[in-house]
Length: 350
Image (tube, rainbow, N blue to C red):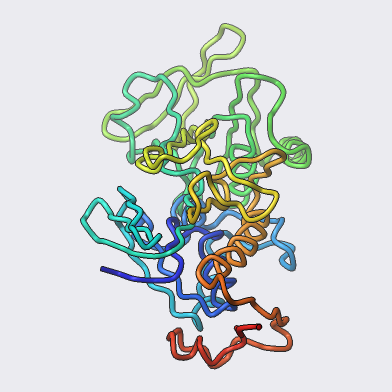
C-alpha cells in the first residue's frame, strides 16, 4: 500500500504543478498516470510544439515545460506510479480513499486530486480505405518528433489550431508542406490563419481549400494521396499524411466513480476549491468543468493552487496555514518527510 497526503491522478502539467503547491504546504504527493512518463499530452503527443501562454515564457516547447516542472518539484520528492491506470476508488471508514490501478497497485490518501487532462483519448480518424494499412508507414495522427519530417513531403488535413500550427512549424522542416481543409474558413486562431496565408504567398505552404483527401496510394509505404477539389481528383505525391481532426476524449474508469459528469468532464465547485460532489475528491485542469471554464494550462495551475489550500484544511482541520511568500520562506531544505513537515512553517494557531 502506497500512502501519501494527496494522491494525484494524472501527471500532466497541472498535476505536476499541484505537487509544487502541495510541497509548499509540506504535503506529500504521489501521482498515477497511464503513460510511461510524466508530462501527459505535452510529453506524449506534442513535446516539440511551442506554447505561448505560459506566464514569463514568451515561448516554451511543451516538452521543455514538463522538464522545468519536474525540476521545480524535485525538492518535494513526489512518488510516481507510471504506466498504470487508476481503476477503482473506495472510501474507507476513516475518510481516506484507496485507489487501485489496473495492475493491482493500491494507494491510500485522505485527498484525491483528479488531474487527468482530457482523460484517455484517441485520434479522430478519416474514413479512408487502407488507412490502417499505412499507419506508421506514412500515416501518423500525432507529431511526436518534427525531425522525422526533415526534408520530407508532408500533407496535413484539418482546419483547427493543430493543423495550422504544425503546418506553420513544419514549413521550416519539411521539403514540402500541403494543408488540405474541406472549407475555405479555418477554425484556428486568427493569427495562425494569417501566418499560414503569409507562408502560402511565400511558397512555403501549399493551401488547398475547399478540398478533401479521398484515397491513399502505395505498396508497403504511403507514396501519394488523392485530393478531391470541386469535383475533380488530383494525385499528390507525399511521404507522410497527417490527419489532424482532434481527439476523442474519454474519462475511462473515472466515469464510474460516482462523480457528477457533464459533457465528458467532471463538475466541480469553482467558487471555492474545485471539489467534486464527493468530499475529498477534487478535479483540476482540463478534466473538470464549471461555468466559464477555460481549458488552458495556466488555469489548471490556478486550480491546483486553490485545491492544495483546501486539501490542507481537510487533512489538518484544527490547523491553519500561515502563508509565506516563496521569496521569503524559500523551498530549500525540504526532505519530504513528516518529521520535516512538523518543524516547518505550518503552525497550529490557538
